[in-house]
Structures are given as C-alpha cells and as structure tokens.
Length: 125
Image (cartoon, rainbow, N blue to C red; front, side, top):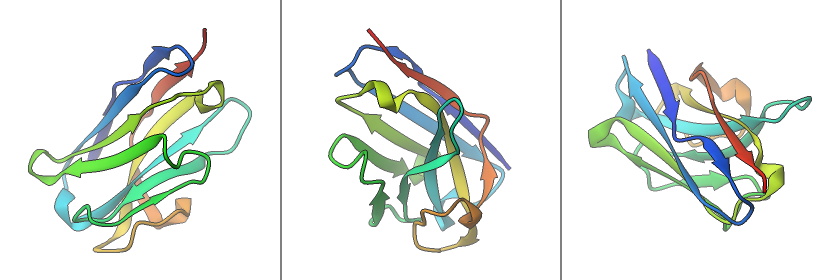
C-alpha cells in the first residue's frame, strides 16, 4: 500500500491550494479516506474525511466552508481543495486510508491504517 500526497507549498493568507493523494496497492474505491494535519509542536488533528463512494463527507469545524474533500475512484486519487487559507492552516498534511472497507468516514486517527508521508502547507505573507 502506498499513499503519496502532493500539491503543498507556500501561499499567502486568503489564497488557495489543492492537495492530491494518489493511492496504490489496495482497492481504493472500497475504503473511506481522510486528511489530517500536524502543526509544529501540536498533535495530529482531523481535517476531513470522505466515504468510499464519495457521497458522505465529514469536516472539522475549523475548516468547514473553506476546505472541500473529494475523490476520483477511477484515478485512485483523493483531493483537498483549500480556499481562504489562514495562517493557522499551516501544517504538514497527511492522507490516510480507513482500517475497514466500506466504513463511514471517521474522525479518529485509530480508524485509519495506512498513511502518506505528508506535504507541507505554509500560509504566510
């Protein structure tokens, strides 16, 4: 199993970025997926999750209305569209795949089994 994030970078406050997570080595279309982030000196936290078919999503309150999770099962890829970025969004962003197939999109780290290496997002002027 491999999860590879891309799309991070430096952006000004109010700007946008689109993160991607390319999955391989498992049946991507059968598993819920999630995005998490970890800022320096802080614990890893939930950002957003999406069901295996893409019909159900789950967001942290701090990102609702600004970040949008989606997936393309034909491309084995999950996305995180990030708009109206704030300095507090600065973190390393990780994608993860659920432990069980066809599970609901969860918020707890323990519900996820495989993780990517992370991509840095820095929001600064």
